[in-house]
Length: 352
Image (cartoon, rainbow, N blue to C red; front, side, top):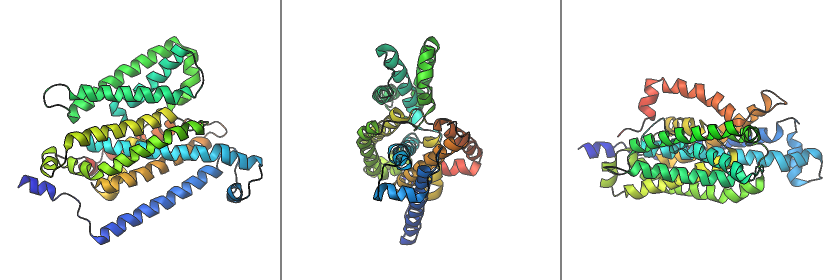
């Protein structure tokens, strides 16, 4: 009877509710397009929409058109991709661990990437920003696999609580090591402080293009696992009873998080709160069905990071704030407000 009651929690959407969700998705895409246009036209140089249109239909090599092609459009596309990837990774982590406070950082990905970048620069003596994605992605992968292995030790194998504790412990350890290295090498801190704070400004678009296919692979895995993750949130026994290969789903979900969050951190640095707040917003809008949570989270994550980047450019203009600081300023108070709400915790927490 208990299994039947839990299975009944599965979203059974009629055509009317599906139309509402589809309409909401289309509205979100429209808002994303508006934010993209604002991002392209806003900055030190205010560029009219007409110039943006002519940049792609009648390019004449003018300064504004060069700014759009070489700076604004690449920057906006990176922000959209990173925002979507972090939000989807956070959604999967919260579903996998059944922890409403989980985020990609729970696997120590940010801390591992930061330590790898700092250590790589110190050992190899390279000051080029192009090394950051390589070292960052390597550090993210090694750290996530280590946390996954630690979370699998002991009786019962992999468990959400053990995974969370292992992630928190590794994050604290790696963050301490990073701080120690930077204290000993002040010049290194000056060179990578924007990367450590999280930034989408001045990124090499060719490096992003090299990473982008991996982001697509990660998003594809997320969509493929959406239904299985939904069943897993209802309880592992229920999922097994419905034929879900829970071990493989957990492995696939972890790989997906590593790819999405690892690539994002390697490109833009440690950008927080996107993977923490956005999944809750998506769940409040669409319920517990990850077939809808994932696309909503991807779009909302892109919107939030674009808005944060726009604010980072305008708040202290002409000085630019790292977008990672802006996401903390935007997401921190909002998440505290939600976390203090009893109804929110009941709705957003994945209950067994």
